[in-house]
Length: 239
Image 1 (tube, helix red, strand yellow):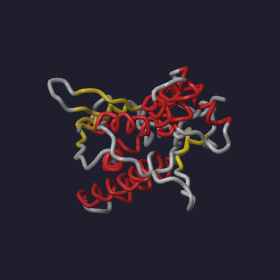
Image 2 (cartoon, helix red, strand yellow; image 1 turned 30 degrees about the vertical axis):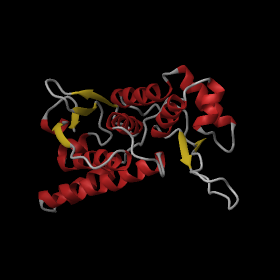
Image 3 (tube, rainbow, N blue to C red; image 1 turned 120 degrees about the horizontal axis):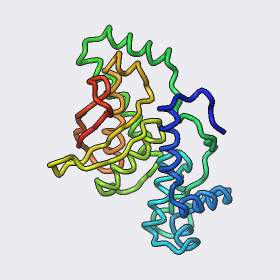
Image 4 (spheres, rainbow, N blue to C red; image 1 turned 45 degrees about the horizontal axis):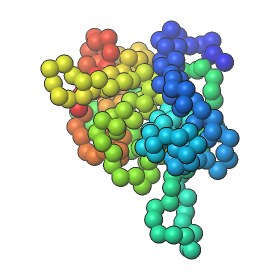
């Protein structure tokens, strides 16, 4: 079902989010497999069912989790259980499968936030906005991979882009020209015009990137290289 209230940009962002999660036919089958199992599935079970390497199975599951279509749980170990970490189980969430704008924003609340931040000194407002994003990003990372060892930087960055896409940013990773660094490019802003009017709001998504990477990889120092409030066509967070 398509939400008739979507703008062209929101529709494009919604399509990007769904395509990112379900563009791979194997991943679609894995999602259906997880939905059919009330207790969820493990990477080992998916690997066996679809004849995949466990790391490939885990990649598909993590991508679905980043999009909010699967949730991750680590079962408690019984007293008589064998030594070793229990396998994570991926279960289907209640997220609707209709084509709608992910993480719909409330324009009035976002505008109120922007106005409130204007009353705070610029540096403090930006620090506060980034701190909120960091907390949220860390919570996202914890929900995706509780108890996991940190993954590679590139894998973590892709997971962050997937999560941002699921939240309406239509994000992807790309190398920076003439540099060995990578960046997350967001082609849509779920905050809309409020972010243009109150650029301090951009610190929230920078904080989300920082918080997620802290949970999935390690401490990083993301910087805003381009943004719509500065007149750019896309927002770029460089690392």
